[in-house]
Image (cartoon, rainbow, N blue to C red; front, side, top):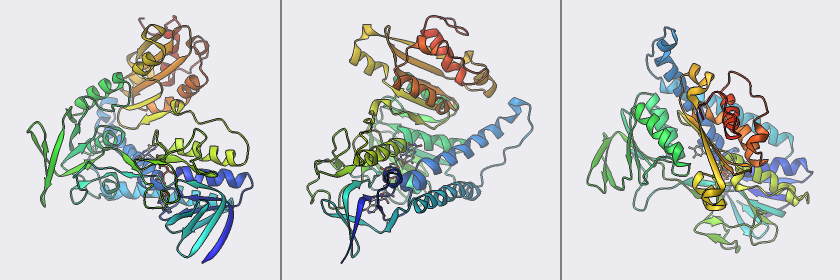
Length: 458
Ligand SMILES: Cc1cc2nc3c(=O)[nH]c(=O)nc-3n(C[C@H](O)[C@H](O)[C@H](O)COP(=O)(O)OP(=O)(O)OC[C@H]3O[C@@H](n4cnc5c(N)ncnc54)[C@H](O)[C@@H]3O)c2cc1C
């Protein structure tokens, strides 16, 4: 067995792991990054990037279909899924090459293979042991299923959905959370009949209910069928399709069923438990400074309970590298992390929902305002509808921002500064927002909440 010593050994080369590697290398550490598959992880190869490429192709399809509304003659002739996949893969490949080059340039040692924590500070890969002064666990997450629901054949997860080279005539999506509504959006734009089955009584149940209501309205208008509060009972499949049973006795037939019921931490089977890492139902537990119960062993990204988002992983990776370097970085505040659901229309949110704000501050201590995008010139030009909902503490800062509409995710940058810097609407109101932009609607909402609405009635 060969022994190798490093300042930092990182297990998993996804968003959390590679950002820790890059920042640690920048800070002068000698870093080994262990990856069993491809550098970039879920986000780059099976998550954020490929899905957003599909969503962009979907937008192009929608715009082409609707081109007559804008006085442009174009004929929508269909989707060439092979060509769509080539476009998508070209984006992933380019980013993958760029990232690999960056890792090499920073002199991070890439170790290919499955790693196992074989000592509190040691990771074994094949016949080699990599020991670090510190170790970061970053093995990410995998698609979840329901008890007794087997993935295979026509019952698929997002991993298989991204491999498809054909468009189903009818697809059933089990789960109305982020991943479910994004795939539903893509397939609908590509021409499939889509039905979403959600056990709770609304889509995107983690968002403020006002966003769910707007999304449900928009999806119904797009012809996406919704089965809300519908309990899944089972599925059978044949060569030609799936037959889904609901607890209500209703059955649904489709070509395929996408299981989008969340993601589970990928943290078992790699020696964590054996080394005594504190875990809870598969999650790796850390303190707020992301250290596990073992001194010098940290965890970042989707294996740590909280929002499973790539940019959370990036920030946690940077945090841990700086923490190890003794820079005493600021703790990553879970509530300040921006969230975007990239369906059509998009949802962008940061901070508290109205319910959470009421619970935290008391109902009488908050006020809310909803600005309708009907009053926003650029939204009218694009032909999108939607709202911005703001929640503030009375005489205090904005604590929640929620927006739905085409491209709403692009507004989250300013929104997260407002919420994280605890700006009052009165601080934002005098700042000038360019006209005509969708961003202007954010300025308008703050003007209104500060008591001086411009293009709004209240
Ligand atoms: C369909 C889909 C769409 C998504 N869209 C978005 C989005 O738009 N925006 C967003 O912010 N987030 C999105 N996410 C979530 C995002 O991908 C994750 O939050 C992010 O990838 C988590 O990063 P991570 O480093 O924790 O884990 P991962 O990216 O999963 O990386 C973990 C890495 O560890 C490797 N690994 C695991 N075990 C071992 C081992 N024993 N030895 C060696 N290597 C190992 C894996 O191969 C993997 O490369 C999406 C996810 C999915 C599935």
